[in-house]
Image 1 (cartoon, helix red, strand yellow):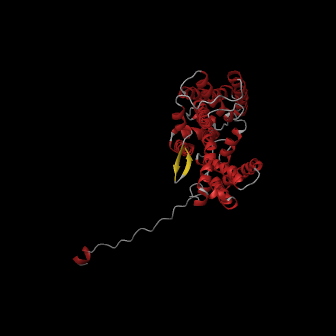
Image 2: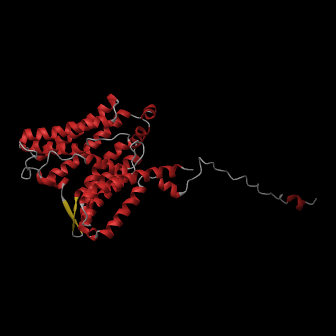
Image 3: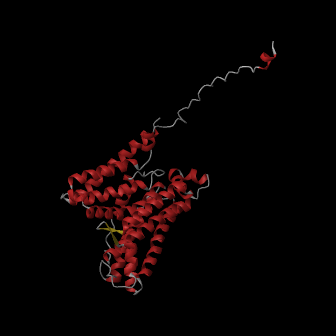
Length: 359
C-alpha cells in the first residue's frame, strides 16, 4: 500500500436515522378547532355575533350609533355584576342575594347622606363597607356551616329584601329615598359612577368603560395570578385544593366579597343616575346576572369558565332587551328570549365540553 493511499481518510457513512418518535393519545397535539372549542367563551361569542346580525337586519334603528351606545349601556349594567358572579361560579358557588344587594348599597348611601346631611362620599364609603360585609357574611356562613350557597344566599336575599323595604319606610316614610342631587359631593360622585362622554357625536355612559376595565382585570387575575389558580382549584374540587395548600376559606369568602363590591358599584351608578332609589327593586336581577355568566360559558358545577364569556353574555342580554324595542315588538317577549338563550347556551356548552375532550 502506498503512502498516498495510507493518508487518504476512510469514508464514513452517516448513521441511519432512528425511528420517528411516536406520540400517543395523551401527548398528541389536538387540532386548532378543538383547542378553540375548549375555550368557554367561543360559543357565546358566536352567539353574540348571530344576535347582533339578526337585529341589524330586523331592527334598522340598531344601526344608529346612539342606539348601539344605549345597547352597550344596558349591557354594562348587567356585565359589571356578571363578572364577579362569574368568578364566584367558577369557584363553585353562586349568590342569590346579588340583585337586592345592589339596592341595599344604594339605599345605604342615599339615606345616610340625606338623613345626616353628610357629603355624599361619606355615604358612598359606608355603602362599600356594608356591601363588603354582606359578601363576607355569605362566605363566612358558607365555610362555617357547610350549607349549600343556594340556601345561605337565599336567606340573605330574603333578609335584605325585607330590610330594604322596612328600613326605608321607617326612615323616609315612603318606599323611595329622597333626592340627593343638591348635596355636597354629588356632582363629583356622579362623574365617577354615572357620567357620559362623547365619541363621534354619540353620548357613551362611563359604565361601558368601567365594564371593559373590570373585564380586563378579571381576565388577568384568572389567567396570570396565583389567586386565579385558586379560584379554578376550589371550584373543581375544594378538598383536593386544600390538600395541595390552596387557602379554600380565604378564596371562598373573598369571592363573595367581590360580588359585594360589584353590587356596591352598580348601586352607586343607579343612585347617581336617578338621584333616588326605590326600595323594592332588585328582585329577579340576580337571575339575570347568573344567566349572563352561564351563557358566557360558566358551569354551575364550578371549575370552568372565563371572564370574557360573561362580557359577551351580558352583551347578548343588552342586545335582546333593546333590540326587541327597536324592532317594535312586544317587550313582554324579552324574558322568553332570555329563556331560549339560556337553554341554548347550556346545550352548546355541554356539546363544546364533550367535543373538546373527545380524542
